[in-house]
Image (cartoon, rainbow, N blue to C red; front, side, top):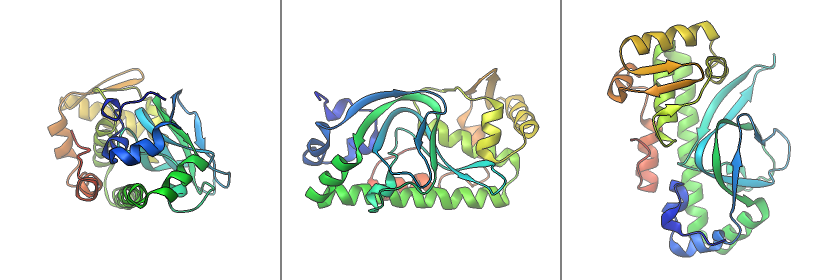
Length: 239
């Protein structure tokens, strides 16, 4: 594959040393994906990792009653298939696409082989896994302690960080599932944020208008995972 490292949008690929990038580049396949495309399924083998260029993948846990709630999200900051980095070849949770886009796919065996050849590659990917641990921990905190307005503001900021552009193509129904909220709460909260001039919502789309206002609405619950990414990997996620 004739892919130049400086041309990729995925921040994790850009962070690799040139030598480590070369270990992967021949096996990277450019793919596009659509809304709700499955990436990983619980208990099933992980056949590939995906370095996202555009779009968002959600890491989702399921309740005993069958309801989904998002515990982590991945965009151009990172990759799916983190269990492979930890030495596990099966998926513990569901991962599926919540914002359509594209990325670079690498077969599980090829990624594992590359990590065996390079301790520096393995270390960078392990540091990324650590940032995801912090992200899921802070998501649990906000879901348990924050109100709907704070939760939605934080989530919109996180999606905005991990995509290009300011338009997020999301339905109220899907946001409700991801946040574990009732749909009327999502609609009411979006209207409140729009009334403050922070966002603009149309059918199936939310546009970020005033990021600073959303930061204030997040009440300090946004930023811990983003700071961990900066501290460990030396690159910023936040806009």
